[in-house]
Length: 128
Image (cartoon, rainbow, N blue to C red; front, side, top):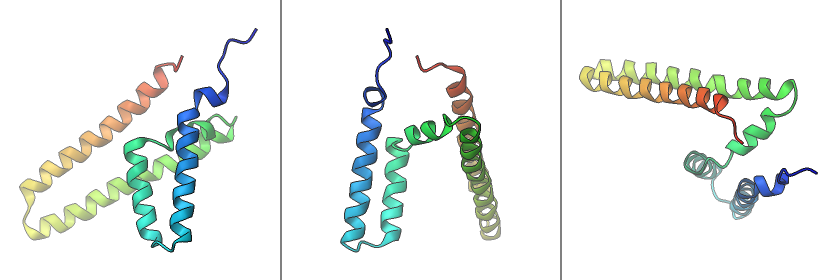
């Protein structure tokens, strides 16, 4: 006998969230809401609810190519954060905010270290 719960039971909250997100985006596009606003709201909601984490896990489970797709998506995020840090640093140095710059770079470094630690712990701790 197989005592494992079905896919639907395990991911029912994520599936409900995906369906709700798709419906909300579709309705917003139908009513002509600006696409930049839809993108921003989707991004903010996805950060706070982690609605797309399950989608990333499903893509990552595809043999051989899944982990490559996830790496191709996640590595540029680190590059983008680093590039934005350099741009903001350049502007802040020109305007004379050296002390505030040091504090913000420490916060950014802490964020990146937290992401890396979370990634490592996520792979070390089994789900079940």
